[in-house]
Image 1 (cartoon, one colour):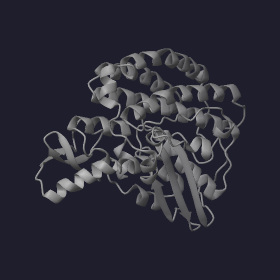
Image 2 (cartoon, rainbow, N blue to C red):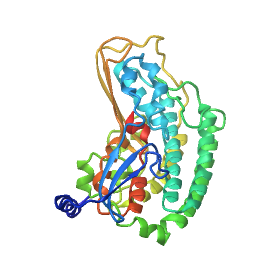
Image 3 (cartoon, helix red, strand yellow):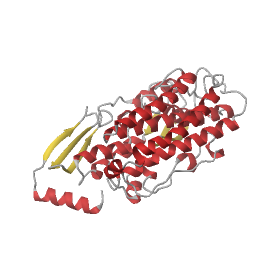
Image 4 (cartoon, rainbow, N blue to C red):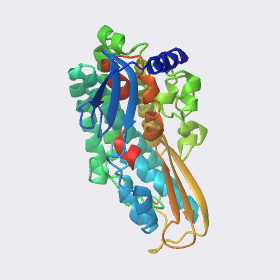
Length: 378
């Protein structure tokens, strides 16, 4: 990643040293999806890495251009399927801005609650699988214990556990179930009482720290140059969070801290997500403290046509900045759709980041970036 490692890599290539080529993936259990890494090794040291993507490419942007605006919303669940509500929201916001549709206040507050509850579920999945990547299988059991509670709450309001398709253009399809807010607040209390166990299992674990501290360091300037976003960027000391710097829905009215760490290593990327759990709890409590009464959707015609123009929408997904750009020519279908997926940008750093590290560290570094291949390939 740094200049010294790049120089070492180039020197090896100039000498014509023949390393061993090893395929990691595309079905390796530690690649978090159908990702193939072609590693060139000198013993256990990585000399070069070539990520191979595309196994999940489905042409989703072209699908969006061949369908009426609202018909594409269910497809967005298949981008980042670990946090599909963020995809629903980013797409719906782009359509709303293109068509000039206002979203009622109550719907905006509920949307924020859904975003943060889904963020918690995503980060808990990360904590569990990342611990397993490094041999701490117990962490998976603990994290999934709380994640099950989060998914039960999401299922209670949406009827689904993974691909929700719950956000609509103009608001939401239905209001919160009775006492759903009390259930979310009880879950917040539960999660706060359990994060200390996560710290004992991982954060304060000397073996875990030796495997992650100082490994895969991304300096702030490199993180910016690669276009990294989300916890991967903020772990390198760059304070950028879409919820704070380009607030959407009701985030401008909510008080929370942007978690920023300085070391930029694998441990910092883990810790950023662990600390964000508490900030999401803090946001959820404010949401239900300020929740107004009122409608949960604006009236939208059966055939939605947006005037000619262009709209841009961005949200802070658990993996970083997710944005939709839509172009309208006045027809019922968008003329052009472009999706900026955080996992795709974050993955670009991997090829340089793992050079000079051991094979076992490749698994740790990749896990700390927390990618979802559904939005990498699209």
